[in-house]
View 1 (cartoon, helix red, strand yellow):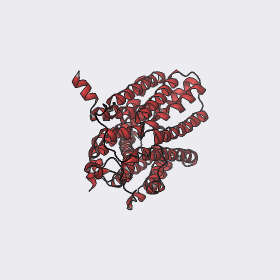
View 2 (cartoon, one colour; view 1 turned 90 degrees about the vertical axis):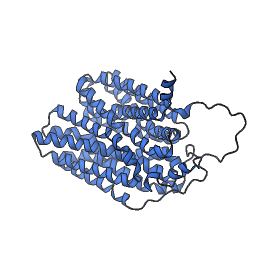
View 3 (cartoon, one colour; view 1 turned 180 degrees about the vertical axis):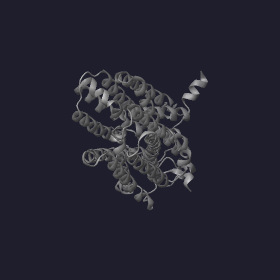
View 4 (tube, helix red, strand yellow; view 1 turned 180 degrees about the horizontal axis):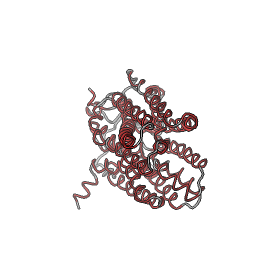
Length: 427
């Protein structure tokens, strides 16, 4: 029994449960909407127009959840985890139980808040449970949970469709279990015993949770904000029209679902490369991963001209590369904001992910208009150019926030990877 509780309180257990929560809130809930949508439309009479409005509303509510995480997660990450589980779990359960478009739409929109809340909460939990040297790699592993979630969604689609209700009921159960595991494995969340005598006074801790960050913080984040916007806008073509492109090119339905699984497998592979990426400066990691996203998006656009086995091979390879690049790039954004100001990394993650999703909303709208006139192939080529433009701002020297002398991380390890300093492995 002691061994069991020892494992549950280990950093590895927290990283594993955090990865599962990201897999659930992103891969099984938020991003699975488009995967199951055709069967939902057939079952409850949901039209294309309302389906688009639901997707837009989900993006807005995701941003609301991320902004709530911006305020809550730095000092109350466990509360943010509970809110993430409630919104994602109850929302997707409502989707499974809905009998009409209105109930389904409301539940789908609410469920997207869970992903926005989960990311900043887990950033803070990883920071306070792991040493500074291990935090970057652990953040990359947790963030890679989107990949396994997408794989799980694709497998559920292959096994259960057209029974989408059971698939989303499973997603609700996984979300609740993953959230409970995160709370159990957060060692820092346990109440500490009262000290025998009052401790010596310490400098005040400023986590940036209850106050808006100062102007220099926002100035230092101009480049990561810009590249997050461009990644979101450029990646929207794949997330929105990836299956459409393959179907228009003559691919069977099974291949389009398997390509989705390949996309998720690529995202899951980030866990295998997280240690090496964690040693790189954030801008270097961003340059490499965003370039892969651009190449994969371009490859999918060109693959639309292929047929038969060539189309299958190109689709699977490009989807796997896109999944790895996109997931790793979002992890690089987390590392970037942590390098600029480690104490406000949770808040920075919220801001960057909000911008990323807003970029996806803009990109999806632009792609939707362009597809009608130009077709999916040219739209994917243009999307690749947009992502590639996001690499340029990272090539110049970054501007950092001033070091925060009052930070409780005043140990040598904390100074090595604290605010205003690059991670230890980048020197």
